[in-house]
Amino acid sequence: MQDFSSILSRFESISLEEMDGVKLMERTDTKYVFPITELSGILDGMTSQYRLLEINNVRVQRYESLYYDTKDFLLYRKHLIGKPDRYKIRFRRYIDSDGLTFFEVKHKNNKKTTSKKRSKVTDIESGMIQKANEFVLKHTPYQPEIFVPSIWVNYSRMTFVNKFSQERLTIDTNLNYLKADDQNKASCSFPQMVIAEAKREKAATVSQFIRLVRNIGVREGAISKYCFGIYNLINDVPKNNFKPKVRFVLKMAKI
Image (cartoon, rainbow, N blue to C red):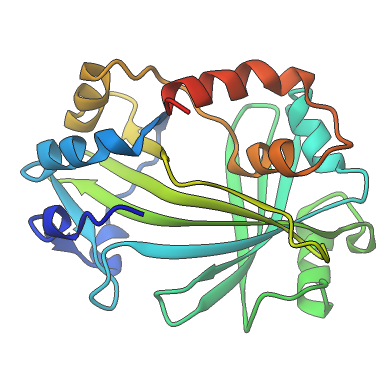
């Protein structure tokens, strides 16, 4: 991964407690993918407009996530065909926050609203035990015993807050996948890809970040990190519906 520390040091910091005060009740989410070779210029153009999350003196936080699915990848398949009522199930560890770990369930309903429920756990588990089982029963229509570990999704994240409008921005780099419970340790990585998401109030004007990415010819659009990993790591799953999205993402990232 490239070293952006000199640019990041120029941002005014914001703490996790301060960032929690940026509430986005009615928001619009805009996603972008672009090559890491463009990131320095984009960050340089953001320094006066944004504050950067800092936790334990760390400004680029590392995330580790272990996703669960059924043996025939039911959750992936539902996403593939655009089912309006779908779930993602995972453990997530925040490495640079003293290993803080949660078990999480994300749900996108038929109104295209996404909610996330999570419960703090001591560590990522290779199998869902009592606390995670109870959480799946409470927050999904599924029985927990149908789920097995599918893939690890790991990356580094920078989180920004706009100084002048209600906007939160995440920029993810160093995307890496590892197939769960695979003796051959099948993996793939995309160090040249940046994935960004801007969350803004619906009435907010176009932000400085969005102006910067538009100026380099990047168009709005992204893909689920989980589904992108399954597409690239798992052979015997349907892929045709995802091919246009994958082609778009790879084009934007110049891969």
